[in-house]
Image 1 (tube, rainbow over the protein chains, first blue to last red):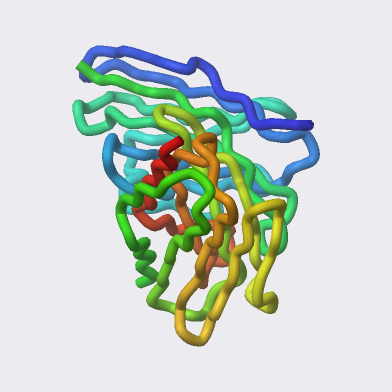
Image 2: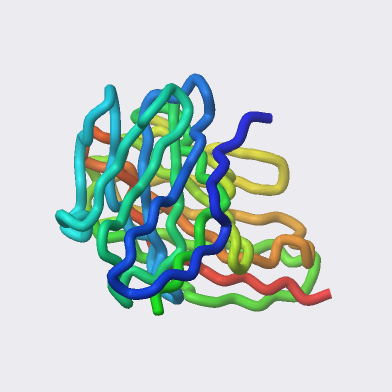
Length: 114
Length: 113
């Protein structure tokens, strides 16, 4: 069964460093998302991406964040200058039809900013 | 602004018991509602998707219902097993046309052998 994959599974970085989180969505999916979950808190929406552009972003998704689909398979989330409060589990998700079909989530990348 | 609430926050039951998890949302204008399972430190596994026009969906021992007008959904788990122990999340796709999901905080279920 097709699945969303994410790399790395864990990343430790120093405050102020740039990180890139990578995702490979399911191949025929058209809508892509990043969510994050701070330990013990709700899963929060960060950004949605369709047709090679951001379709919606949350208040969390400030200028330090960016997303890219550099080729036909990868979908990346970049944090330019990490802060302690960026420590969280980051989930990538994709769906073939945003209104009618399930969003499939990847296993997540656990980011720890020291 | 859509808010999603799940009650109870935690639940412990003996094996074999039938149980109900609750999810409520403040804005009834939704496209669909999804139930997910999350094991500790892991990703989200989709369990059931209910469209706004549907009243319920079933998958194996799981049955999810949706009452849009009252802003409620329930997840019924029949004959619970220790392997059902996990956190169950509901998420609503609401007024945004981008597919953004709004999540509840989850119910952590423990099924004791």
